[in-house]
Every structure is written in structure tokens, then in C-alpha cells.
Amino acid sequence: MHLNETSALIIRDFEIETTRESFSEDELLNILSDQIAYMLEYRTDFLMSLMYRLDIDEQKINNALHPLALLPANVGLAQLVLERQKQRVATKLAYRSKPTDDLEGLEF
Image (cartoon, rainbow, N blue to C red):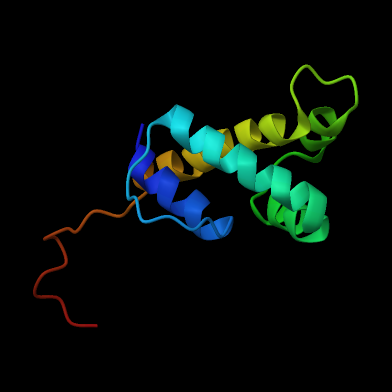
């Protein structure tokens, strides 16, 4: 897993203020859970907009927000965000174009 890339995306998207550049997955989940708890209380519209922009499944969001969910809403949402961002990083790295020498010398 590419935790540094995932951390960078989460820190940027969720406006997390930190001087650290690397986190363990548990630390990142805790920081994100705290930020989402704040957003649920004070910036709900922004949080929901962000979840939509990150393409997190609406049904999974609703399940995390359900009063009978197994985890507190902020932790459930943080887990969804972390998993989605890990998927995005993996996909980006898998499809990153590699430079080729095949086109060297060709004019366009």
C-alpha cells in the first residue's frame, strides 16, 4: 500500500493541518475520524459534498450514518474515505503511463 500518497490526498481534501509528512494507517484513521467528527457537527454540507466528489458509495455513507451502525458515524465514514483513497492511489499507480523509447525520433 502507498500510505504516503494516501495520506497526502486525505490531508489535502479534508484540510487537516499538520506538520508531519507520514502516518501509520491507524494514526491516519484517528486524525481523519476527528476531522470528520468536526465536519459532521459544523460543516456537514461540505463533508457530504466531499464524499460525493470522492465517489464514495451513497449507500455505504447512509449505512455509516445509521443510528444502529456498529461504529460511530465519524469512524465509519473515515474508514470509507481511507479505503476509497487507497483504491484511488492504487488505480493511479497501476495506470500511470510509462515513458517509452518507441516514439523517440518521431515527429508529430
